[in-house]
Length: 344
Image (cartoon, rainbow, N blue to C red):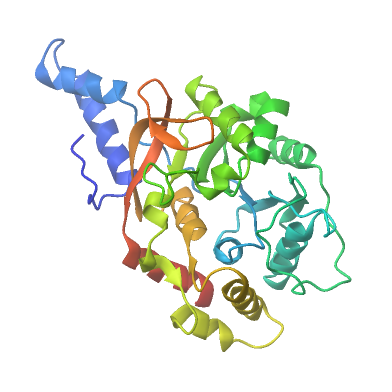
């Protein structure tokens, strides 16, 4: 299938072309060039299906970089199939465990999404990537913490596939695959994380680095064929100024103009806390990964074999896990989509 990194075809279009070619080849004489091309196409793996309309689980470290909260807001506003929000790298230590889940619950409530469950997931209790203190009303209770029970319940009350969108560490996903191994056949995973050209070659990308053992477990499951059709949206395409929200920029300004007490002003306050404590910008890694998970044509993928080294750095390895790895992205249409999701 002809493809280049600047290809404008969507995943649905690419898959449809593959399926048409395979069907045509099956009718061609054995040994013919068309039959061989079709067989090679089938053997190389089809582009993943877009399971549009199936339930979505967001697995997020909301409360650090506001790109997580922005992705949750975009999903809450535009995706009725959003079913569950789990948190990872959850707070503890000096903070009571579960502040990320409380923030997710508060944001979803402001969005009118009381139908979406929230669960406080894995955390080592020592995270430093949290800047949402004071954003959640004190009276809002701490959320349940049974990730396995919540996922079992979702599997039991729905049929078919479930889209798992990983926007943080892979801790919860590894735990689910260990405790509910049969879930692997039903999960369609899009994970934001990793990178072949990470900006600091001495360490792994942030989401992988937060829980390297769990990342190793997940990638071992992919390599063994227990988890298939995994999309990985790497920092190679998300750590880009084209998708950065900065103080006084269009998104920040429009959020500041929203009425007090609403979800948009919550995002504005969260952004300001991030700018003051960590970095003068927020690149929208997670919203870009979300867009890929729901079949938007902004990220181009290619089948690649990768592995993680001892400390979680991603490497090309023909014996490693076969994943749909992000190759390039179209940032202008993505930005248009995100602003519509937040403001229209």
